Image (cartoon, rainbow, N blue to C red; front, side, top):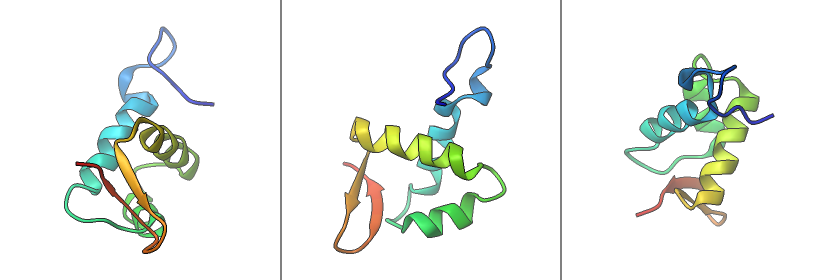
Length: 75
């Protein structure tokens, strides 16, 4: 279930806060989802990372290069 800010969840407990964590990790160069998961393993649960990546890809914030198998920030 995607957590959004409301009376039950503070901002830092929501998927929106996870956006920031993921975007900072992908700031420099494209990387595979597996490498991103390894980098964020102590900060984000796998389910939370999948929810956040799904929404970020849907919003067009990231691009998915299926030939190279990496995700990168859209410019």
